[in-house]
Length: 282
Image (cartoon, one colour):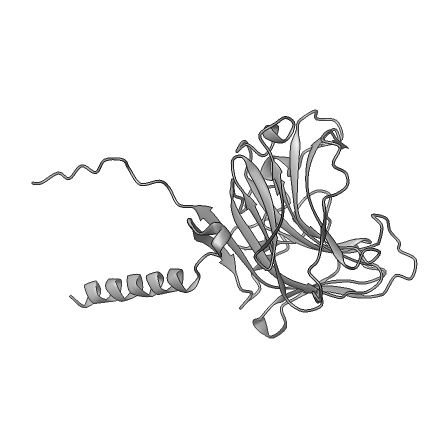
């Protein structure tokens, strides 16, 4: 009986946790399937199981920069001049071989992030398909997608970029390089925490800033349908880079620069209920 009560208590707590973390309106019929509040930094620097984040995470992002979790309340990605990986500091939800990873197909992904609004700051949050890990994308002839949740550069301080790319042999075959530009609401302060979200469905991708719809892109036509139609699960990369106007170094580059991420939430569609319920009585 005591064991039964323990199980019931745990189940009740899980239900309360799920209710407390209800999805935003644009993902009303979704459920939370993964999150990280950085109450402790789960980061691996080797190819082992059990971590939320990895550095290095993928072949084109070697280890570098400073990654900390101040007060166990947020992860801070710091780029500084002279670091081992010259242009960026990154963490990803995949190990560098792709042996261990967290990746998803469809869903609502949201991030509470803040960063230094200074010259040369280039924060980015984006998603890439798991099959690309370890791939030689310069010559393998395979289509790969890229879903940019948020990119910001100091030469356009009142805007941020949300884009989908389709790559083949390191060329953007969708001719979207670069970018879908979203004008920020008047008075938006990016040095404080804001929520950047993206809703990925079988037919479209939509971007949100503090739950405000910024834009939607149809993915049913080629080449987007080749990479965003459910063929590949996508993992997350968060990056503090150096540069402006899509180049590095940046004239007037500030050193160092930081991006802080307070939490990450991943919501998945709730499966449709069966059309008929059969009850077997014994």
